[in-house]
Length: 213
Image (cartoon, rainbow, N blue to C red):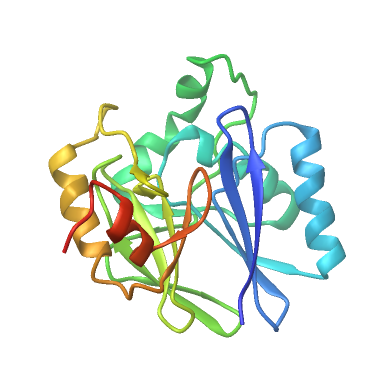
């Protein structure tokens, strides 16, 4: 069974997730940690739970979701996994972060692996399928575990809303197509978004104006 810890990071209130199972291995999703206090909170949780981080996956390449990538690399030796369509966006995170006053001296770590639709990532006893969901950015992906009916949706799907499409690489047409794919997941699928509260596919179908089947 999965245990999911949500840690809100940086001034954009980005959700970093630490996902573990009974093996005590864990996957870190979108580490946006900014500053010593947030980094310490993540380390303390991992230490207290006795976890071994083995993956750092990114749902997309926007800077608020990977501000902590260098910290994860230096602390746990993990380089990030990201969709290849967002690799260039990932590499320019310093400039994008500086544009809103989030200065950092850290360079983005070398990408460990690029993934595409249908690929898989695994830790412990669990496997997650990569679902390519462009619209918020060209390389947005969802990590979905069918065994547990859990999906980490990044900035594609939020509770009662969706990610913005007016940034470079965004497309309202594409995100609507991506959302239609996500509605094919079971209604009881637990959705953990990049910002805000968790939800389910069923709840979003009933209440989110952007979703239908």
